[in-house]
Length: 153
Image (cartoon, rainbow, N blue to C red; front, side):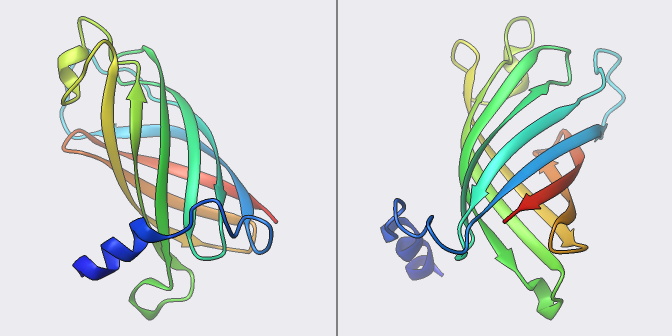
């Protein structure tokens, strides 16, 4: 497993965008919070990402966080297709920088410095058609976000 992770970091990240890549436009109508904190508000998200044929991806999203603050997430990651041998099932793992958790909610995300903090988002999804997919984004121990996406080839 460690050799696979090392290989991923050794990839030439600026190659492979010319053929077989696609754009993905994503949106989330809402998020389910595990706790019933009265300070939680509805979370809405829009995002765009570019994915290579080998599953490497880079993207960004804008969202209103759980406390109503404008926020963003810039990330890179990997998509893993045919999860469990099922053609339409996929998993995705992204990591990057989150901006937007400002006082008095800056303590709601770890390692927050002036609104900037690291983020990791594992996801599980289903590719309905070549264009349409849906996924669940697991947001730490706080929430799960439902997301719909459109692929443009």
